Amino acid sequence: MKIKPNSNAQPTLWQRLGAWAVHGFTASGLVFGFLAMLAIRDHQWPEAMSYLFICLVIDGVDGTFARWLRVGEVLPEVDGKAIDYVVDFATYAIIPAYFFYESALVPVDWQLPCTFVILLVSALYYGKTGMVSADYYFVGFPVLWNLVVFYLFFIFQFSGPINIVLIFLFAILHFIPIKVAYPSQATRWQGLSLAVCALSVMDWLLILWNYPERPIWMIGVAWSGLLYFTFLTIYDTWLAPKKLT
Picture 1: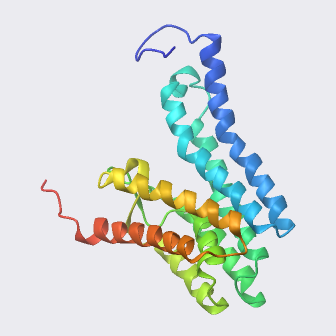
Picture 2 (picture 1 turned 60 degrees about the horizontal axis):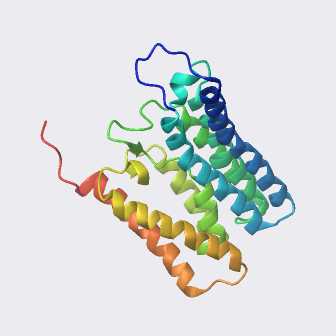
Picture 3 (picture 1 turned 180 degrees about the vertical axis):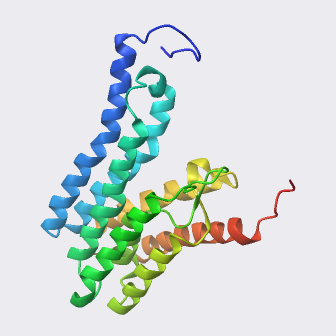
């Protein structure tokens, strides 16, 4: 049962339990994040990234559950966005930074500097006002270091110096006013974006399952998804027709 907007009726016990369950579901991202840290410690790379992908899925669907159950109305004393920010910063920045450091993607002398850059720019990005635009775009490259590390380790497998350049490039892009679409909130080609996103996630899981083997078609699908969202960002930022005001 949903609470009607502007209703003065008090939420039932079941509604409150449902709302707490949604908050618990969001917070469970930290549990899976901790499991990822244990796997990183043991250099179990596919397992670690699998846990981080579970966190990604939780973050992708918990908002839908919250809206369905009107969590903000049922539990106004609990700030779900604050919980979400805590979990996101841990699973999109801190734990991927730890993965990056332990996986030796760059020469030893650059491991700490690059890790510090990931953490610092992520914190600064979270402190920006207007991190999300009125038309539901991320302004600047969002804190998605889990995906950056996934591509560096499992897809690209570039040399250390190139990885250093890419880390600093993504760090700078946090503060460049590009428009990065969130697939479920995209205002352009939403259906296609969701389809590409779903296909990419399935492909990423197959890549983790098959590691250390790297079937060429799986790598090709991963590259295709990346190129699609790169093109979408370029188009939305610089090529899309401007709306008249």
